[in-house]
Image 1 (spheres, rainbow, N blue to C red):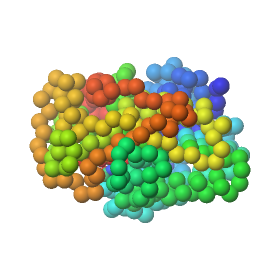
Image 2: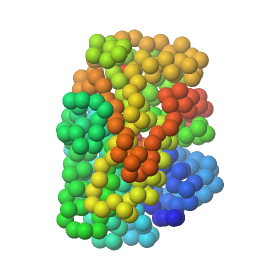
Image 3: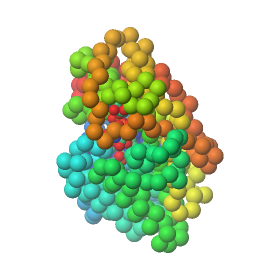
Image 4: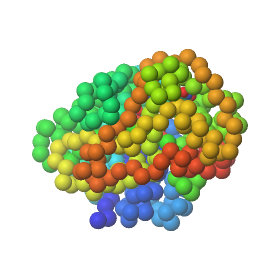
Length: 339
Ligand code: NAD
Ligand code: UD1
């Protein structure tokens, strides 16, 4: 059934891919984004790719009055809430800005939703809420812990959403805990466009492949993993956003607040990612082992069974496809959305 969806953070990496799938599924889309970590061009390309238009509102969630205006501007069936700051290292340097954007921004959004009678929401959480898990694969009922201001901001929002759901009936809230989203839309027109030096492995590897950086720094090869390097559950961004389409379909029958892992269930090591990138790009991609990055955990991958059972969703794209699609985007847009 066609719905009207408010997408906060819709100009960002995951949000722009989600807008495209929403439009292609026949939904109407309004994007709220302050463009603090994204470009208007991403949405222009989403409109080009889908042949459909969306409404864009350049608004900061920390502005309660403007947020409320947008929430009551359409009869929204649901909100998908991507907006927030996401760099773990930076969050330790500017924690107040992280709590302000991620927690206060969400409080404004929820107050506006409550006021205007919008009770369906899908929230971008992260596997970081599991900290360093005692066993693998990670299930939704594992203990939660926050290792950084970023991680704690996600935990706080999860807790707020659980409290809101308990406070009165009628809320339909989903916490989607993403594992490691990488890759790009197969058109090569939209993708991840990090500002400055990428923190995350996949965009860094792609920038080495395209010649913007000299070599990949492999953060430690002395973990107790199959080749000594870190292992993560990398998931194709298109699979991830299809999980949101499935979540929207299931939202009406979700009472209260429920969490789902969005991962593939398979872990790949840093060296395996670099090898896959070499295959996809045909480039050498030099790599050097350096010290471990403080705060990193050895290994992390999801048990995605709950999402399959309840949402009828599972990831289908493998690591090679993630790298081929990431490379198509990187090669065609070596400087991201900035021509
Ligand atoms: P992104 O930075 O590309 O997108 C976030 C968007 O939110 C940006 O367009 C930014 O301009 C906007 N934004 C930030 N603060 C805002 C505010 N106060 N008001 C309005 N707009 C604001 O990040 P992404 O990778 O697309 O991540 C989307 C969400 O998923 C985030 O909440 C992130 O924490 C979460 N997440 C991401 C990953 C990942 O690896 N990318 C993993 C787990 C969870
Ligand atoms: C990071 C965040 C996590 C967030 C996730 C998705 C940290 C500590 N964790 O996860 O909270 O949910 O991003 O955005 O930042 N690596 C290298 N060289 C690099 C970059 C990374 O070897 O240049 C290694 C890391 O040590 C790790 C793996 O690659 O083993 C993946 O790293 P990364 O892409 O940064 O994601 P996470 O650390 O899993």
